Image (cartoon, rainbow, N blue to C red; front, side):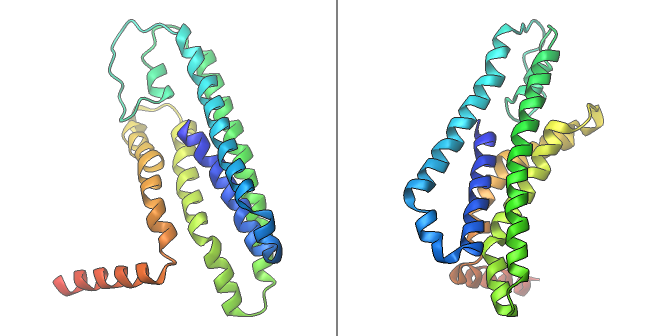
Length: 207
């Protein structure tokens, strides 16, 4: 549920960056508090529906063997691997819904950034292009981190040699990326940059 909601929130943020860069004069009117709250509520509703779609079919599955998952979190793929009944339908539904959600949100992000980059390239001054790009750079970093690790988690081939990497990637998109969000989005703040510079300077001095 949280992962699905996050990809829709990332898509909503891409729309926010699009309006800020491509329609700056109308930004405050378009992206008002009401619209932002509706986007967030919609993302959580879709996430809840996604969770129901993939959780309810599990009620018909039977577990008669080991009860320990080979994973760090109780996600559907490792849980389905413990079932002693046929889980083809469950896995098909899981991968289909994940692909559908991923393609919709990724396409929305892609289209938004095509327009954003096109607008940035039309800015004449180098300083103007730099400021415009810095507006969406943090969001772009989070999108790349989340989608690259999330897609590997759900679309990787079944292989025992990839299980360790699979668990590490699941930590990346489910724990580390959300934890890094405040840091990534704060890097544009001058005070944060100054504090980071001082910290890195201390590490150089210790060496």
